[in-house]
Image (tube, rainbow, N blue to C red; front, top):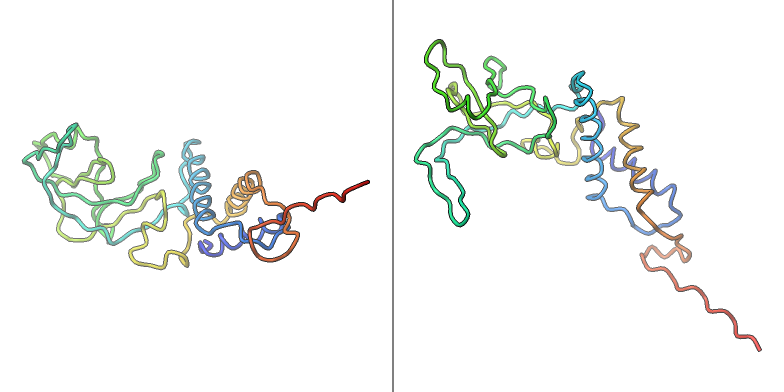
Length: 221
């Protein structure tokens, strides 16, 4: 998988090859946003086909900590405490399409949590082994019957891969995209850049974003 810095650099070089200017018109943050956006388009199209999402789009995050706190219900003007505490994990923002979460559980993979809806999560289990379960509410995974341990693992397609690095460099990390899709990802980014970025030629070659006014026509007598 390519590094984010490599993807960004490649897209900017190709875009500038089509724009006759030495002015700095493309910003890294904007290009990074396009990369995130188009990556989700590619992964989402795989999810929509129902054939599964390529594993290259998933990230393994092993630094998620289980916390415990009282649930608050937000009203129109104030919040109300529910009087009941739950174990929960604060998650990075997950992609909104189906099968975006492949695994949530112990770091060594020995105990995966079962995802259930909110109704099933609040239903007391009467018989059999109480398996670890979780339900998603906003950006939190609420945990029931959690096993021993402080840190747990998530394998998922994130909205922003930089939010799941556990302290790694946000620029020089392997970007979670299928290598075979890199060319299409760059084309999607370039298509949007070149269709919206209107930059006149840099006639004075002064490395500024100011263009000289056109010369006034000579007076005629």
